[in-house]
Image (cartoon, rainbow, N blue to C red; front, side, top):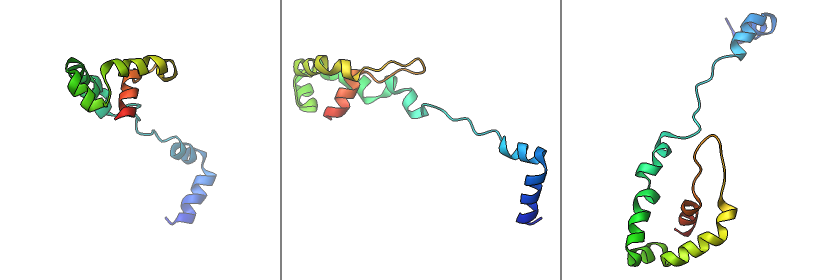
Length: 101
């Protein structure tokens, strides 16, 4: 069967047309597997608390003191917050950390 015959069948046979157009698509995921466990294995959630315990390391990593970081965060947090019913959003502190790094 050549291409013209296939196109003819597609145009004339509504059952074939329906079957071809309503193929089940592969399930798509909103969040990649890599990011599902970011709260457990991600850099922010593992490193940030340890840096807070060592202010000198925090300063070397973030180029500011923890108090400065939280001051900036307090000022811009209302603009960074997001609410979602579908998945957990990235926190304002994470967004600021990514921006500064």
